[in-house]
Amino acid sequence: MSRTTRLLRSAQFPAILLLLAAGLGLLLANLPSHDAVAGILDAHLAVPGTGLDLSVEHWVSDGVLAIFFFVVALELQFELTRGELNSLRAAVQPAIAAAGGILVPIAVYLVIAGGGPSATGWPIPTATDIAFALGVLAVFGRGLPSAVRVFLLALAILDDIVGIVFIAVLFADGLDLLRLGLGIVAVIVFAVLSRTLQRRRRLDPLIVALMIVVGVVAWALFALSGVHATIAGVMLGLVMAPRASERTRHALEPWVNGLVLPLFAFVAAFVVIPQVPLSALSPAFFGILVALPVGKLLGISLFGLVAQRIRPRGTPPAIRFPDLLAAGALGGIGFTVSLLLANLAFAKQAEVRDEAILAVLLGSIVSLLVGAVLVSWRAKVHRAAGASDEDFGDDDDLWVAHTDEVRTPTAREELFDERHGGPGKH
Image 1 (cartoon, helix red, strand yellow):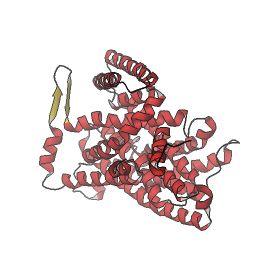
Image 2 (cartoon, helix red, strand yellow):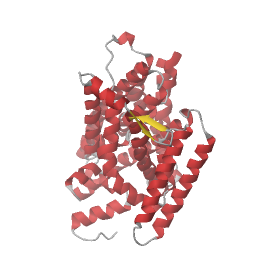
Image 3 (cartoon, one colour):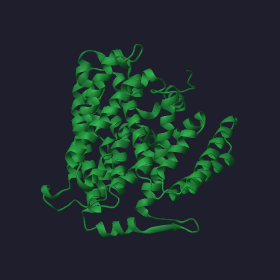
Image 4 (cartoon, one colour):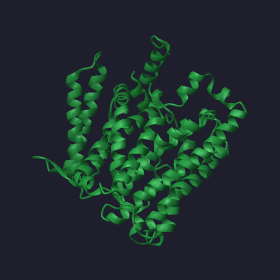
């Protein structure tokens, strides 16, 4: 495995890359280069004979980002069937905390911006960015109990599920049931092909090519049906055969981390900073700015504390309340899905949309900084108490616990082979 691929599979580097891409987009939007870049993003590219005619910006947010949601769905499938959320007992604690991390930010947002046209932005502060949250945890969390990472991972995944539901239900526009039905048929064909591929002893290039074609057709039909096109990526990922899905996720992960997400972050953050006093900013700006760092921290930590009190027997050990605070702060890093929700919620209010995007960036940065401080503090406390030895073991185990490179059985085996010079035996 190359050094570049290793970096793109790690927890830290993709988060840094994402932040740099967003910063570059924001910078270029506020320099004399604005008009040139805006002209490129506004240029339309049509596919003859299909009815698809999107700007470059929408090809990124509707098309390229669908690959990210496809990989997210593969991850969801794995965690719900064989991972951290494969039983009710395992899911109940992060599910309750996730509910708090959704309901409290919505309440905070509506208190601040619930009146007038800004009210439509209430879904924006409900998301948690997995890449960023785990990246901060990996950088500053050496010594934290592994249960904290498992809790945060499960929490972020459940947040993703809710975000996907919001996108599918709230932002469908002019629904075309015929095209939607044909898109679902294409998804079913994709599922059948993936199971055919899984039964083959060797990779069949013809079946892979057919799956790609069917997947693109499904995406196009969803895009033309009025449902947001990223939902096609979600459905394709959820129906894929398990073994094939693990290999596919492992193959696509570096591309998503290194290209798809930074490209979307650049495009989404390409907004002009309003040259107005704070009093002239929309209520949506202040609602998001407060709801992400404050609403998420309060909702996740308080509901997480309740979940600890009522957890059934046989569930993972309780996480200390200060550790819940650290996880709650990291949950306020909304970023990717929050940026998409901001674009969708205020699609017809360009000025409010730009302010909402700025608020997502600022709120996520505040959460990142607060989370880094809290995680560093808790990690220091646990190291002083000897928790690192108890929970992680040797350096190899610690390295494994802090990377996303071992999220699937296939990846774990490849990692073992690479580090120990021979076939892994598990």
